[in-house]
Length: 347
Image (cartoon, rainbow, N blue to C red; front, side, top):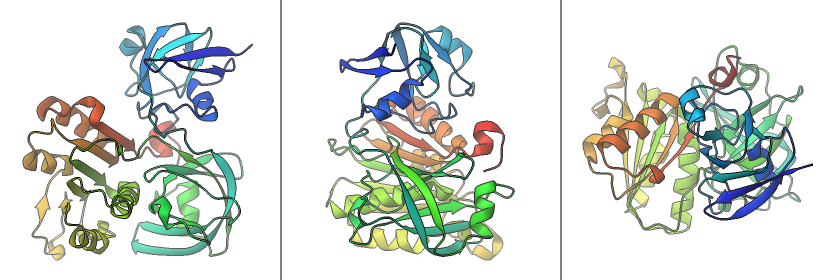
């Protein structure tokens, strides 16, 4: 017997099988709940359990602590219902708009704009259009069923009669998938993907100024969002902060500079945490989220879209809300949790 989950305050309901995570059923039924990693690591899907009982699968304490669970909070990605449920969660308009599909993808090109970053262009079937929001991600399905998640770095409008997606992949030495990308992967190789997933995309019903905050290859979905902003001629003020260790890690620095030159409403601020002497860097240094705070001490009227390393995302959320007045509901994030972050296994 399936259980019924009712989401408040929207009042929407959907069915969940026993032992099935609530989020899995919500995605299947097109219910737009907020989420990120789907693996109990990021905490993006945390919500309040108002009525009913769930059993949580494995998850990280930073995503949901024992005290939070005792206080009535749950993670939809790893909570299975034992009764009918009523949960309190914001529904995300558009998150369940496009069907999740499995399809083959052919490697068209592999480029390496930085020593540890590969940009893949994957050709998709012309008769199976992948519809998605700029900022969402797909999962590679490996031979043994394991999955690896990567965000689309190109906006949906770039899909043509030869649809393709662009992905930015950082090498994680010892990682099953990334070792293959940086080693044996060749053009024309066939991979299997599923998507789109995620609730990280631009909320277009707002007129608030936008802060885009990226670290490392967290730039990928930010790039897609910028392409979408340009395509839709969205005129809200936008500032892009991209934090990396050294100048070489700003692997699409020229692209970001060119975008800022084209778009009168876009300002680009690269920030290096460990610039090398040979970089000759005269720009900003330090932690990227602190550069945002120095420039914008009052974020009470802004929206922030943050993507990258978990420590950057967590620090930005804490400091922006506690010290800069950012409403927690206006912080949207995609924390790039690796397999090692999730399970202690290679990426």
